[in-house]
Structure formats: structure tokens, C-alpha cells
Length: 310
Image (cartoon, rainbow, N blue to C red):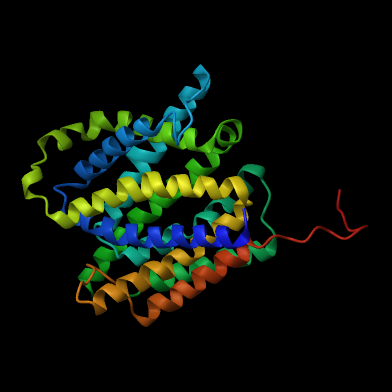
């Protein structure tokens, strides 16, 4: 793949991410419940992915033990991660959600270091500290008198827990992703997650009165299903086939800026996004997070001859 094509596809992924964060906010707020929205998204995604199986998505060839691992990944991905994300997005700003999920590479770095029982290099640790400082600036825990901002912080907390689950999923999915086509693993994890979610949220889906759901909420659902769960998934895996993961993940650094920029444009056009946070502290925190993640993602140069340690 040519570098120009790769950069274009990465930019397209960033734009889709920003659109999804903004549209999903409306769905999270205007569906009857987060449970109903999560179940509707999961069911629609499962149907669409099954329809694509055999064409854009290769058919599964998992062993019995691997199917069990797919079920575990599905539980992490849908009943936990997707529910927590939508629960948090209902209260927080889209830019906050994008900012927290942009820290996924740092979470993966810390979890892998913990599993290996060794501390990450000091430069990567500096990046982690810088990024966490940026999150604190955005969440502003010292502001306790504004009830609306307390609600936003509560949404941030839900998003953060969901991001932790996403980090666990990312690391746990590694062996299967190396053994099978990533599209197949991701698709069937989502299908399994929809099946596992149904006993807990199926009743909310059945009882949902669709007539009272506004059009913008349906647009948000379409974004969650088509953009987030299908188009962006296939695009991401296409990039991973041609580029190193560290090169692809650099694109996540631009998602908070793109989401906030889209929010600002919509405000200027008279289409304000609920709970938007576009103040100076948000941009300072965003700069710290992006800088911290970029530093932590830098590749280390190989040690010079004679400097290796035993």
C-alpha cells in the first residue's frame, strides 16, 4: 500500500470516529434506556456481520476451545465495553469520550508490562504520566460546585471503566487475532456478545416503544452499527494488514481533536451538541493527552553494540 493511500485511510478512520462520537451522543440520550440501545446495537450489528460472513468477512474455523475464548471476548466487548461506553456517553461530552479512548495504547502498554512483571522504559512512563495529567485537567476534579459538570465527570468515569475493559479485550484477543483473520475474530466476538447480552437486555428491546424515538437517535444508532462496528472495524483491519500496529495506532491521537473540532463546527452552524466542553482547559488537557500518548508510542532505538544487559 502506498503511503498516500494509507494516510488517506487513516484520516478517513479519524473522521468516521469523530462523526460516530457526536451522533452516538444523541442515541445515548434519546433512546428509552442505555440497555435498550446497547441491545438494539448489538442485535443489528450481529445481523449485519452475519450477512457479510463469507464475503467481506471470512467464515470462522475455530476449535471448540477457541469458541469458548470467542465467548469470553464477546462478553468483554458487548455486555461490558459497549454498555459502559454508551452509559458514560449519555452524560459526558463526545470530546471527553474520544480523549479517554485515545489512551488505549497506554492501557495496553501498562497491562502488558504488568503481565510481563517489568516496568516500562522511563520515556514511556513519562508519556503515561503526561497523558494522565491531561485527563485530570479535562475532568477538573477541583470543580465541585457545578452539578452539571459533576454529571459529566460521572459519565467520564463510566467511559474510563469501559476503556479499561477495551484494553483487557485488546490484550486478550491477541492470540486469536494472530491465529485467525482479525475480521473473523472481531465479527464473531460481537455476535457472541449480542447473544450473551440478550438475557439481560432483551426485555428492554422488546418493550421499547419505537414510535417515541426521534430521528436523530436513529441516526446515532446507524452510526454505532454501520460506522463503528462494521466500516471502521473493516477499515482498521485493512490498515493492520499493510502497516505496523504502532503506525496505525498513531491515528487515534487525532480523534479527540477531530471530535472537538466537529463539535465546534456544529455549534457554529446552529446545531449544538449536548454537554459539549470546548473551553481552554479542555484543549490544554487534550494537548497533554495527545503528547503523552505520542511519547509513549515512540519506538525505542535498538541498544548499541556492547550495551545489552543480561
